[in-house]
Length: 422
Image (cartoon, rainbow, N blue to C red; front, side):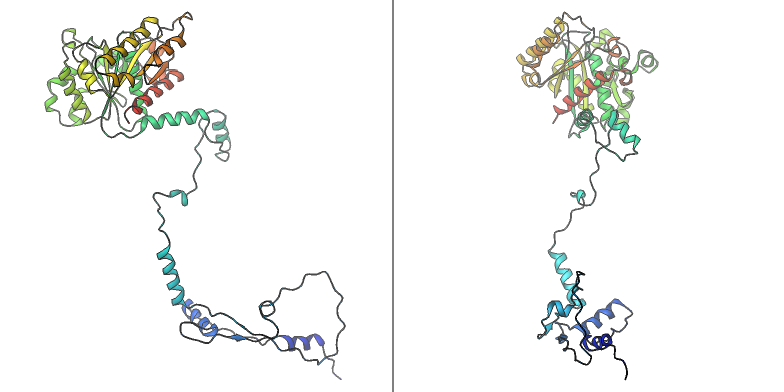
């Protein structure tokens, strides 16, 4: 008598009949059509496939003893066991056709918002943390090849903010006048230092005008005495004689001097001619400069009553009042602000930036804090420039030769100037 394997009998009686293998297709379209034929198509009205529950197994083999219960996890249920009861049939929903899927995608794209790649770049590019420069953070960044980035320090963030303020884009041309009632307290050195700082950070070069009636030395302080003497003597008087014929920056450059990206107009060196600059003549120069430069600095010399001063103040957008820590320098700075407020320039006085330069390194007997308090309440901002041999010697002023604290002070002045323009 042949031996009957109960496992093979149970498998034969309980296993549902295999579905016919889908026909092979040579493309995605043919495969999609074959799937529509097999599972039904609601668009064409094809009848969906009905899956019946499998019949109960026949008792054609001896009953095997039940296996003892084990802790092994049960096998996952089949589709029929999980979703269909033993005595009921389930209807498998038909799959959508290619035409239905394309229509659904088109409707979804039409209703979805259009992504703005220009105004929302952060949706696609992860924001990069700023790179630290100098100090422990910068050294750690270099040692790890950029792998460890702690971000910039508080000091670096302040410097970046100063750079942003200085370099902001301007609509139009603006003029800052640098003046004082007393000479020798850092007025011209401030003009050169701030002008070089503006040239370093701004995309457009600034222009500095020497309107000092007393043989000003603005260009000598920016270029050096030796270099200036070797160049052709081009002064503000030469520019005035030919101002009507200048119609381009190239033509204007013939009357300019250049300290890097800082462009300068030299003052008249002849004492008999220098004091003859009138307000009308200065305004002609200012109008010409405004067509080519967005930022101009005017070194006014000492005093506020010489001929060109009314034209300078009339065209100024803000002022730098130079002062010193000596008692006389502080008093004259305050007198300058009072004079301006009492002669129709109250707005300029209120928005002025007072710059106190420790040029002569006064003794400890002078109360610097008291002088600063004396001036800070009558101006928009007060900035102190520390003692620096690169300023005190009265010679060439270059940013490379200045102390870091002095350069920082000039950056603060430049940022305060541009703040007054907007």
